[in-house]
Amino acid sequence: MKTSNNLKTLFFVVLLLNLVSCSNDLTPIKGYVSAIGSAPLDLSSGFIVDNGSVTVLTDSTTSSGVPINIYSMVTDFLSNGVTFDPLTNQLTGSGHHLNIKFNSPEDLHIAPGIYVFSNRIDIFTFKGGFVQDSNDFTQTADTRTITSGTITVKTQDDVNYEITFNCVLNTGDTVNGTYTGVVVVYKDKYN
Image (cartoon, rainbow, N blue to C red; front, side, top):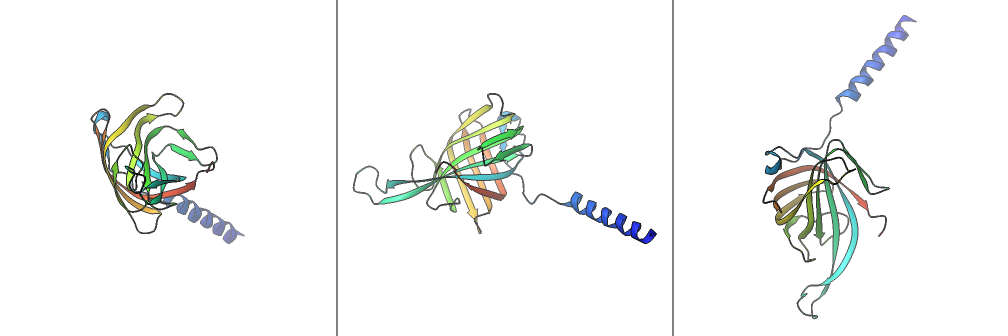
């Protein structure tokens, strides 16, 4: 009987140690925004909402271009304390949020390459980016928009990414750094 109780206790201790020692496989972004005193954004997770495709002409200055599909990959990077509900498309919690709309030549992931800020829809461009600091998602957030820059995307398996930011905000501050980690893909429920 005593051996049975000891085995139960040992099993419980081993289970508890395994639960406590589980680590987060995501590496936080090493980006900084100088407007918050060069403090890190501490972004630890990422997700993509695939908004579907749009067909554009390769030569948009004339009507003689070849039609190509461009896939809108709205990508969000969140700090600990912020969660995303894919059923409602809502963020909850408190923390930092970086949003980028990648125009990818491929569906269901961000194709590797160098993306350049642009207000036009073209492959390997991004637009609509912004940074929100210490947002509780119940009030108007301190939002700063990205006005220029480049983002380099590397991936080997369409899940684990290395994304390097070199962007300027409307305040003149910069977002420079690299996010290395998992980026989960959700298909937009409205497309």
